[in-house]
Image (tube, rainbow, N blue to C red):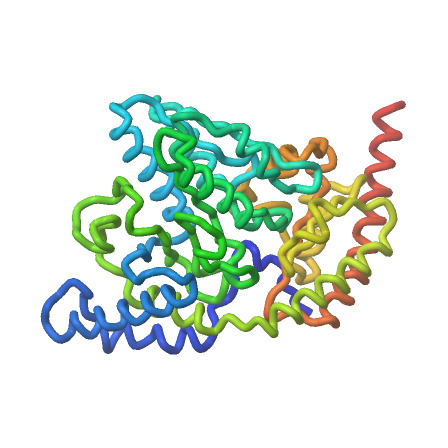
Length: 398
């Protein structure tokens, strides 16, 4: 049996998405910037997808900037907003607030700006359950704070952050002019689109990043939703595309696929996945001495992150993979690293506990029978690895 439990890393392209995209690789291949009929056919497709996204996120079509994915969207918004604010501030460093367990695309963008003297950054730590306290953000705000960036759903532990509460707080401060300039609020919503309310007015955000391959669109397409009054410095130049904010010939097929994937989001499936996740958690409790990471209540419906003390995470993954079961020890972007998860360390876990963690993320293909198959084998794997680990400790202590 093949069981895929790594939907937070990527999801398969939905058949309906692949079907509508196919035309734009061959028959409708025009450049959307061309004025002839071939180009205008492509432009129409791009505009229609933009309208679909605008309706979903409750924004204007011109507030959608298509990108190559979530990482580019994060880089564009973090660097673009900060550099624009830095220039307005007579090239004096401005202040960014983010969390200590953001996606590397956010963290490394902030670190780049720090290194180049463009920004100073405050990294807010989550609590032990993986939740950011809005009050910690309020306390960190300074006169020169230009940007706050807090992810909507953590990509490793699945905790849902109080984005609406933070957004309303920042909006209130801006309206009361308690700071010198308007603070821009961004959320990385890459893991949230399929499962959470992403209406930007509901969230009170100024900018929001998404990535298509997390919800049935292909890899290589994403978007930054950013309010039209926000000043941003383009990070890719050399063309007028995307309202002058992101140069480059539009990925028409990818954009069409992204729009179709948004249309296909099914809230009934979300309920089924959550029920399956709850069943999985119940079955996992049959394994002794485990630790669930992150708040089990404020959590994405598809995420289970659990530590198995006495068993090393990479060894668990290898054993699962040999049985056709795919999972992860953390985010896909850091899977090549042997360092313990920065997310779990930020939450206060020891390096040992972090190294024994596994992230299971469910999706449309999963069934109860698959979970039973996983549990049947996972119990044996954990018992075997713990026995081996105990033997190694005995030998080392002699």
